[in-house]
Length: 363
Image (cartoon, rainbow, N blue to C red; front, side, top):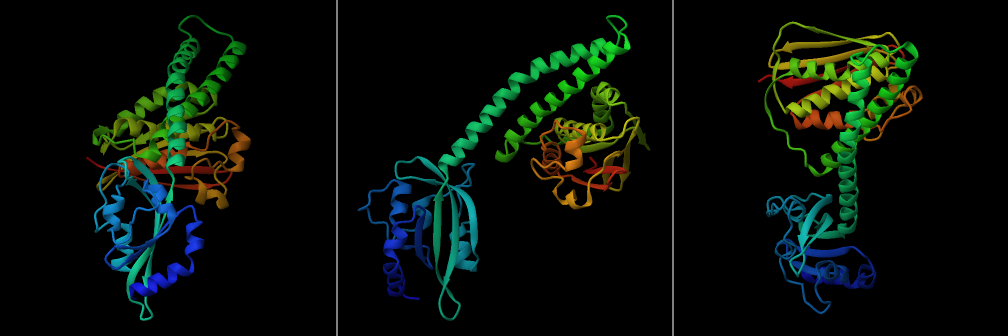
């Protein structure tokens, strides 16, 4: 494919592509710019009369992965199209403008082939998403600040109610206990929402970095069990653990492991039938430790199982039983399990029982 053919194509649609808000670039097989529209100059901060043809696209754009790591020729989307004939859709990158500032953008590259199906260049479409990214970060920062501000007072009130329910200041009658149980359940739901907001504000931007170390999963469970005792009593359920040994050492982040177990057991408590006995199992399976949590309750409808780890998803029967909820708990749990190089899955029969399994590598 010769340059004259590129020119013929671009002249034919020149007025059309110049009216597009996204940058459109035509490259030869060496990654040099043959033609482009006005949006490229606008996005990168160049004057309209500055000639960009002939420049190496990779050198002009200076792409990074968003964490400051430069994108090399080997990993560049445009060369995946030119060298391998692959189409790359909506890869998110940071580019450097003429004044040295950064922009966020998505890039889509498509190989250009001649009549013999040989790649002779590529077309790049770049969409500036800087404003969208900034708005996302503002929302994330707000959620983070609000959540941190709520966490301490919520914890203090919950501790006070636990203290009263424990009978240490004096005995309470049945009516008083019922009121305190209702308050405790409401506060626990609010506390879960706060924790979900904190976690969800970190996950999309890879701010959560697991500190993988040797931890005893049984000790983590014991801490979670102590945290959830009053919550279980308020829902009129009990929890028991079956284990074949005392120490279950895994390689994982301690805080993440605690959040994972707490989310799974809290879910079991919320969606169990009254007077249910939730069963926790810990067992060693070769090079892995498997944690499982089984409850008798509303279960998960067959047609909804594929959505269970999706962000903000809640099945209809879950909403009917527990109106308060974000649909974030299992999404966050799966993300944390993956970050810690584990695996999570479940088995469920609607209106009967549900078991969640989590597999961690032994230390």
